[in-house]
Length: 261
Image (cartoon, rainbow, N blue to C red):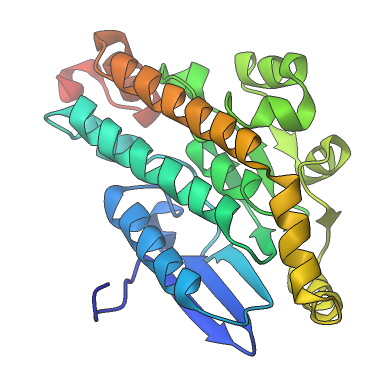
C-alpha cells in the first residue's frame, strides 16, 4: 500500500467505525480510474483493520455518484481499453465491499446513477435522504449495463421489474426505492439513522454478525455475482467502441455534431 493517502476517496476510522467518502464532488463523484483506484486502496486499509464495528460508505457534495464519467469516456483515444480497466476496477470494489466481514452502511443523497448502483447494492444497510433518486441511463447513451444492473439488481427486485426500470430509464425516488426494498430508511437526517444503527450494532456479538454476513452470502452466490459482473464487463467493453455509442455520448453531453467530430 502507498504511504500517500488517496484523495478521491477519503477514509476516517474512529471508535471502531470506518467511514469512506467518495470525494469528487465537482463531477458529482462520477467514476474514473483514479477514484476506483483510491476506493480499492482504502478498502485494503479497512481489510487490515481489526475490531471494526461497521463501515459507512458516503459521498461529499450534492450527489452520491452519477456512475461512469461520460465525458471521460468520450475523451478517450482507446475507449475499449479505458472501459475494460474502469469497469473491472468497479467490479473489484463491489466484490470487496460484499466480502467485508462487518456490516456496511450506505448513506445516499442526490443522484445514484449508472454503475454506482453496485456500490449501494454491495452494502448491508442503506439510508437515503428524501431527495435521493436512482436511474440507469444506459438506454439514453447506448452503454451496456454494468455495476450490477443485470448481475445483482434482479435478485433484489425481480427480473421483470429490473427490465422495466432499465428499458424505460425510470427514475426511482427515495420512497420508491424504499418500497422496492433497495433502501431500509428514508430520513431527513440520515446521519442520525446511521448513528442509531451503529449504536445497535455495538450491542451485538461480533462473531454472530460475521457469521450472519457469511451465511447470507454463501460462496456459490458470491461466485454467481462475480460471474455476472464479469459478463457485464465483457459486454460493456464489446459495445462501447460502437460508433452509435459515441453518437449517444454526444447527445448526452449536448455536443453539436460539428464540435464532437
